[in-house]
Image (tube, rainbow, N blue to C red; front, top):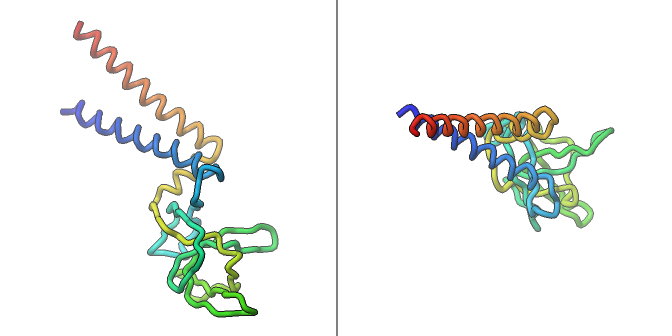
Length: 168
């Protein structure tokens, strides 16, 4: 019975690491993907999007009130992707612009968002996974995601060999 549980844990861990090995390259390779992947960094969209969630974003032809979008926010130094909900839209100089707000924020965002600044609409959310992906994108994290599965795999194989030798 103990071996059954160990096998379940083993295969569960292997599946998780294989999923990471698939998601990380796809999320970084522009040619392989139709979608953009982002990790939620703040609590501004709680309870819908919690910190550490992985969101999958798709460019749409049109956006409407209620859509959760990721857009380019320009501060003095960088362009930062922000994910907030559209709460209003209107025409400004023959262009549709959007007013956004984080669900957990008390006030609307200061900047009005042009359609050209929108990266896409959130179409899928995977809670917590983003934290692990963010760690995996560091040098130490990459080592961790290679060494730990290797140790588990090698240990399991050594255990199977010892078991086989003891039977023969």
